[in-house]
Image (tube, rainbow, N blue to C red):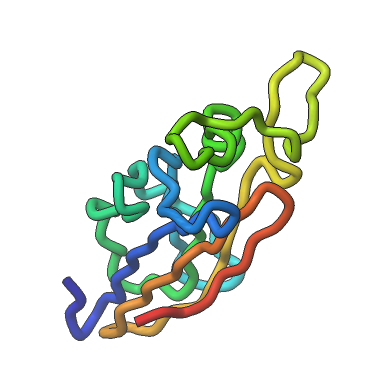
Length: 139
């Protein structure tokens, strides 16, 4: 909950390659009280079945910059391929092969940094697919 002296942050992830929320993605929240200050890791969470992080830590008073770090590679490594009409998972043929034999994403992590002002709420959704991503300030 925001107050006059702090901002608040929420996020969710939509996997646009399947049109569904991305479940189980680790998200870390960091903040700093100025452009040249050091980052302070505040804590983290993982996305739920709706792709949301409902329990991100509160921002300290004086925060001016926030960073959300999304660890997306493990999500793509365990993500099943598209589903066939009968509900069976189809083998993923679009995923890049890694040296260790696993599959992953072109961008293994996504770090989003943005400025905040006291008293405002910032909802920052991540639209994700194996070869790209997009973010925006939501409501």
